[in-house]
Image (cartoon, rainbow over all chains, first blue to last red; front, side, top):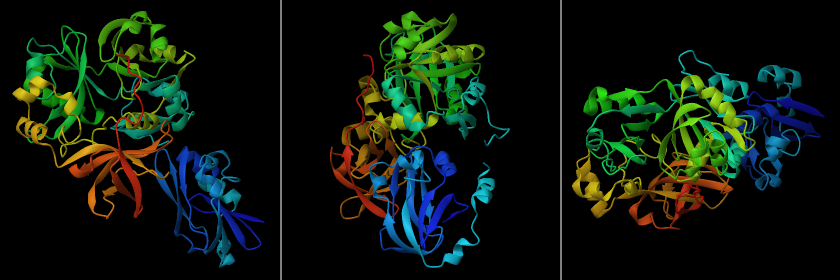
Length: 122
Length: 366
């Protein structure tokens, strides 16, 4: 299993060609209390860097960018009623969607945990 | 932390930082946007118990002049001559075409008027006041301003100043708080019962710490201050009101006394009197999106057919309402309670209804 990070503070955990996407602990802390999450449609095709959802905190709305290209195969419907899960468990139950990677080589240039922590200033 | 050298601080800046606040620039000041409790927690705590807010960035002024009330009435549509000693009132500085230059609180402190204006407008307001009242206008930069808001505010302040308990909403008393001479009003901008306490800067930290020592009181940042005032249906200058909106369009006609409506004598009176008599083409209303997505400032408001009828001026998530809330201006055909509208969020029209303001029942002690 591979976990990679984007400069925009998303994480993607890939297993068997399917990536689970969420935002990092650093990102949720910067956003503050999450009150609403807008997720893409299952079956939608997104390109790397596309806006593929929105996470709204009490303060502001932020786009979620697709870390890789592919097809959305599942979304975390539980966030509709419990958006605060993004704050309490960003790397686990607060995931946003699952994506079938169309080009797994896109992962190669992405940050690993050590590089991301340096990027986030942690 | 983004600390620019040109940002001003308040007598409580160090305390905020020690309490773990996230500090942001606001109206030229370095201010706490949230404390470790977080915006939602701070909002809910204020409605359930009590919150302490540093509002020292706001402008505090006093006017010492026998004809101060009469002269101030030439700048604002509020009834200032009719404001009895120990009472306060909300009003606006209007311009010649009836737009709003700023909103303010005016207190009759007995031997002088005490005025509180918005931080971003205070230099312009001071110059504006001096144009009419001359050197009778004194800025009070050596005073901090604390707001203590919420159902436990009375108990928390009365522990340091017993006579605060007897005050009613929108009244004023000079009193000692923990032995320090303060100017106290029973007022605020959250929809809750509470007080605003003008404190000598040198004593501000000590009094803030005494109030925070009360088990029901938490420090609250600007983030929760904004969601609290939005749920309370109160205007934020520069967003819900500005020089392009009149007090009548802004649904602030209640703040214009009967005598002033009849006699005029304030800037923009011709327009404002005509609007009171004949209505306006648009008006500020409350808006409740039907889904969970917040509609933020700037979102377009349309009718069911997609025709533009206005814009959201404040919007976000209301923690007490437990859903999105907003305010905005809509055309006169859509101001009725429960009128169906659409709020365009990220290009999508979201169903919403016009709602009565405030969104929460005020806790004011009448």
